[in-house]
Image 1 (cartoon, rainbow, N blue to C red):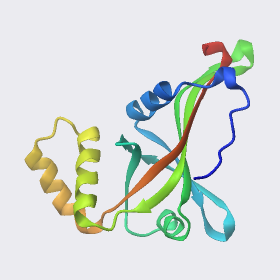
Image 2 (image 1 turned 180 degrees about the vertical axis):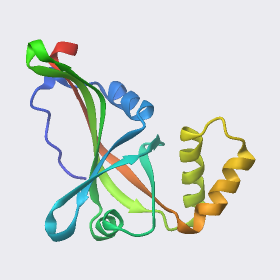
Image 3 (image 1 turned 60 degrees about the vertical axis):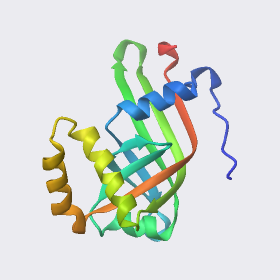
Image 4 (image 1 turned 30 degrees about the vertical axis):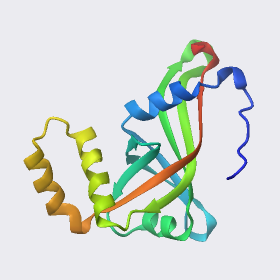
Length: 161
């Protein structure tokens, strides 16, 4: 396993529980992967935290997919709060960054389970029948991938401590 840097401003570090709570409750973040020509490629995505990993869905082709297939290390940043404080010349923020290995789900059963739990997060009041119909309609054109979290760090503005 990789050796990750310690946070420089430890007083502002969120606990593991606070960091996980942000991941559970938030609905979007920014995935960063190694893109074309070695340039970082960061893309906003909806996601689900489930079972110690982050679950995403995607079309079957594109820059993000090519990057994931080429290199399995990635990070994902979620900003829970970002409030500008003009009088303090700062922002009151809370955010987390997850680091880990990302992989495309190739097994149809694993892919189906992933899209079902993701669909439940974003459409919890839809009937199972409606959800299953929508999943089956889009399944052939759907790619699911997961980020297995190796390191998670959260930070908040000192004013929020």
